[in-house]
Length: 95
Image (cartoon, rainbow, N blue to C red; front, top):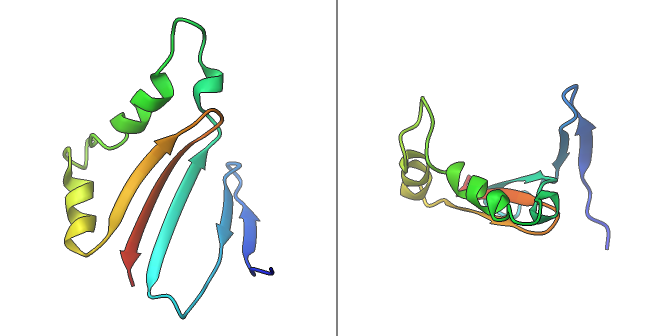
């Protein structure tokens, strides 16, 4: 299987991988952080999962829930997951 993609590493170290498929009328973004439960100390666990949830709680410029509401109002979906070696956030919206 050959899936064409473009890869670029930004000056801040972020890897950006882009795949275009004009037959599919969506835009999807998936951001992965190489941080998960493996980075936690015994007796101090659950922080990766906690921070996953905190990322959706808003910020100075976005009230809690506003990001979800805006995307879902346009037919988008978003969520996040945490695992042993990573935490990822993903969003899919109609073009």
